[in-house]
Image (cartoon, rainbow, N blue to C red; front, side, top):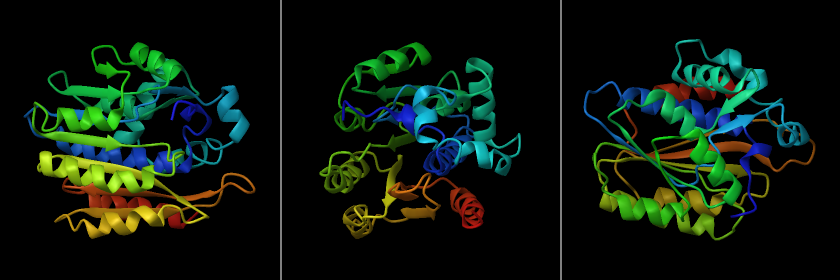
Length: 257
């Protein structure tokens, strides 16, 4: 949706869940010498300032990464991406998923990023030189690219869910992508809301019955009074080795909040 800007939500607890496990998945994939493809359908601006007006207005980062950064030791791939963002943007910088990928991927790997919002797209182009950055519908881009070259890789689908039909659309897109790219790691993020809207999607996702696919959810307190997001979910097709254990470890951290 063209009105959505992630700067208001960057660094919140949902980002911590999503980005920590994305970083672990990519860190595993790059251990093999073969190059890979990284595809992201809703990329945002890649680099955020948590001292900015947007982040300060919602307070979500203050209740998110500012509180839990100590969960991640310096050698953790998510901590490495945080450090790279701060080296580039200052002490209050936060990496979106494209920058996390940029930190962890290698020169031979390829990145394909889509973002429709004009200002976010312009910022993404500035932040991600050398990547294939497109001002286009990200789901259509992913479907047109798959199977990509190189064939190994990961696709992150991270919509705003401001459009109600996105809950119905995502399981269909995941199924299509998996049929076209059966070896690809497909990661779909979704919010867990007090109104239960996400349940319209999780049932159809489970009904896909994709062999080996996993769903991981965490719960957390609302960032402010009346805030509707109280958790974060990931549905992962072809999860890399070690991701389930990493998810369990992270889930135990969230359970302590």
